[in-house]
Image (cartoon, rainbow, N blue to C red; front, side):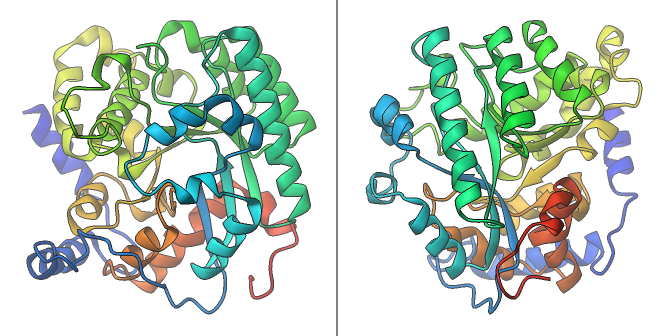
Amino acid sequence: MAGDGFARDLNRERRAGTSRREFLKAVAVAGASSMLSAGGLMAQTPSPTGNAKPNRIDVHHHILPPPYMLRARDQILAISDRDHSALLNWTPAKAIEEMDKNGIATAMTSLGLPGVWLGGTKAARSLARACNEYAAQMARDHPGRFGTFAALPLPDREGSLREIAHAMDVLKADGVGLVSSYDNKWPGDATFAPVFEELNRRKAVVFIHPAVPGCCSHLMPGIPASTIEFLFDTTRAITSLLVNGTFSRFPDIRFIFCHAGGTMPMLAARTNAFVQRHKEIADRLPNGVPYELKKLYYDVANSTNPSSMAALMNLVPTSQMLFGSDFPYVPAAVTANGLDHSGLSSADLQAVNRENAMRLFPRLSLTTNPPGIH
């Protein structure tokens, strides 16, 4: 069966240091003893990591520039059911304080939801430019501490192409930040292809944050979309880019997806089986589904519990995993502490915390890093 072939392909790989089998055994033990307890890894209670030196590179780190809060304050606050004080009181200084407490050397910043696509084309272009200029200035003010994923108004093709040029050529952004859906269109939609063609030409890093599509924003009363729907919309975005051939047509884009890939690690074999049943889709993927999924990058923000880590590590090697905090929506210690106690070898921890991101952002080795980084 197609799903069986996919599983066999995924299980051929082993990692340096801790093998996948050893890791899964470790998380199974951890899961049996801690997932059902209030203080276990599943609960992910924040606590200090104890790192003496800042070492981590955080690829999932949000900023809340004043023009963004002025334009979208209510939508920003509506996303989270946590205490809003961290959002309302956010400043670059508070971000650095959080980074220092959790061993984060550099944070690659991006906007959270709702993003810039609100209020029409002119408003979206203006908001993207203002937020990108703010992020670039923040990086200049704190050398080595921040990088930037520039916001784009993706449904506005002309505006997006202009902002790519400004952000990457003038502001020297490290990549671009998108959300997983726009007006019930997912990123593999043909209307977005010219933007991805330009990003491919530039060999850009593209960070895709989950969104809440209009179809599914209030499915379950009392359950915020960030609890469940974020994970499914990440999966929809990956599937859209996969089945429409975006991944295979634009192979030089380095994509990062949030929260351990949403539900894709659980649904990968089913997705592969679907593709193999439809020749017209399979023809768009000459290297196959497993190849395309394994070359993506996945951050582990708010996902360093036994079940999520085991599922992700059955899909990809640790070389494709990145540290992310989701600050200020989630305290950085939630993911940092969970990762420190995940059972990964020291070599794999170093890869996830830093080395994998250094391959994506080699310019970080040339910047002035905080004391203790080497």
